[in-house]
Length: 95
View 1: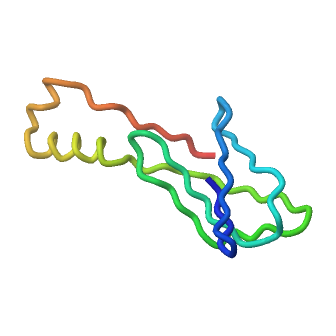
View 2: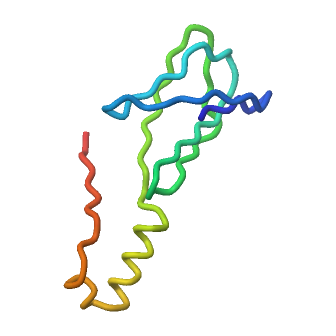
View 3: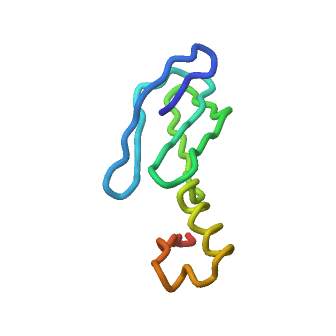
């Protein structure tokens, strides 16, 4: 979601299969980008300035969320838990 920080008007956006997103027709202003994804912490970036005829790019990186943190704490508390189940793999590629 993109929120105009001056008017509080929001615009929804959805990602493509490759994770790319586009929010067209924004008026020049300052915006806040909020991205949610199940199993990950909410990503928020404020103060994004959009000017006239300007394309702005914001890369989003999601840190693991509460579910992952809970599983990690359980593994740290009980090392044998790794033998019982498999923790989800979190991978990222450096560009």
